[in-house]
Each structure stands twice: as C-alpha cells, then as structure tokens.
Length: 275
Ligand code: 3PY
Ligand code: MG
Image 1 (tube, helix red, strand yellow):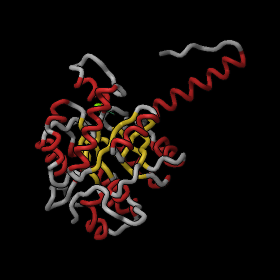
Image 2 (cartoon, helix red, strand yellow):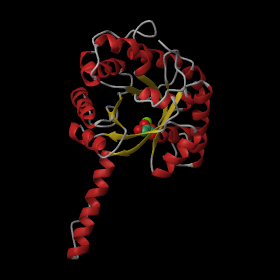
Image 3 (cartoon, helix red, strand yellow):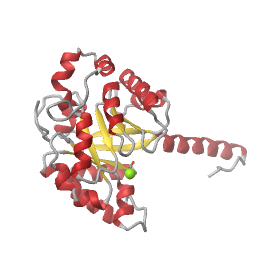
Image 4 (cartoon, rainbow, N blue to C red):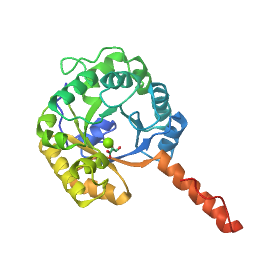
C-alpha cells in the first residue's frame, strides 16, 4: 500500500483521502448533536464532509454508526473525532464507515503510534479485520476495501498542547499517520499557560501556521478547526486542507435566536434567551 504523501496528483479525486492528498481544500461540518438526520442535513445543505464528535459532542457509537449511514445517504464524506485515549473506538468507527479518524490530545510519538495501530491494517498497524458495514456504505466488496483501506482511511492526530507542538516532528514521522489536525482552543490555552482562551488570536495563528508548514514539509495532511469564515481563508493560505467550519449546536442556537428576534421585532417583545 502506498505511503502517505500530500499533494500527489490524482485526476478528479473522489475520495476524501485523494482530495486532501491532491491539495484540494475540504470543508467539514461539525456535528455534536447525536441525531443522524442532523448529520444528513449538513450533507444535503452542501457540506462536502461531516465530522461526528465523540469527544465533546453528544455522539456515541450508535449515533455515529447511524450518522455515517445518514451521511452516505446525503453524499458527504464521513469523519469522526474519537474520545481521548480511545483507540478501540477508532477501529470500531472505521468498521462502521469512517473515512477519517481524528484523535484528540496526541502528545507524543507513542500516542500517535497507538492511534495508527488501531486505524491501519498490518503491516502498518494492527486493525482487526471485519469491515462489513463500511463496505455496504462504500458499495464495495471486502476484497476491494482491503486493497486500499490503509491509504483511504485517514488517521489524523490532534495537535493542541505545547507537548504536542514540541513533539510535532516525531509525531509527523510516525509511519501510517496521515497528518495532523489542530485544535486552536486547547492550543491557545496551552500557549498562554491557561490564561487565555484565544483560538483566533495572533500567537495561536502563528503557531497554527508553523504546524501546517511542518506537516507539509513532512509530506502529510494538515487540518484545523476554524471559528469563522475568515479563519477558513487564513487556514487555506497557511496550507491547511481540511477545515472544520460550523457546528450544529452553534447553527441551531444562532438560527433559533434569529427567529425569536424576528418575532420580537414583529410583536414588540419576546422571551429573553436563557444563556
Ligand atoms: C480545540 O479547538 O481545542 C478543538 O478541539 C476543536 O474542536
Ligand atoms: Mg481540543
């Protein structure tokens, strides 16, 4: 199976892995609400990929498995963020349809190696065989899945602590690790020694740019969580290729408030928001 390489030439890439390796920017919606139809709505509204969040969102194994089926129906790429130190869930979600797994709080080469072991089949890792749900979603035979599974099922390690930034080159050197994904909120907490939550701050942006450059130099993919469209633009310019933008909770909150404000404006009063 082919080694990881960013910006390889694939004519008209169709898979998430091929798109990202070709240097094509992909925006992923971020689903925290454990309702498969919400994931499907992201897909139907045009998001090319959707990430189901089992770390900070309400998703669990069942909602993520059903969510992947809904994403296949809606036509979006299927990504999941696993809980901290839960590589068993990475393997299970790969079987259920994940095209990309994101692992939070990867701080060392050892952490990255353990994660890769769960996502990749031998000889790269030790993923156990039985991908019978993912092949249904891919409309593939198990043999065809086996041929490209290690290349096409991405393992992205989250870089969001000082330790992780310090160990970045070691992490990027792990065979089978496809790339990194930056969590700018945790990163800003780490960079300020816990003084400031500043995901969109200048120092955070500078370190994010450095991470993207180092990933590119290692021939690996870089992704990032973006708060605001301007950050998506900045991230692409820095060399990131997978950009998370838009969470379902935030979208619903904003839409609900806007609807109430319209009623307030029409009627002259209305209930105050509860937080
Ligand atoms: C962070 O910003 O720390 C994240 O993990 C984004 O979800
Ligand atoms: Mg984080």
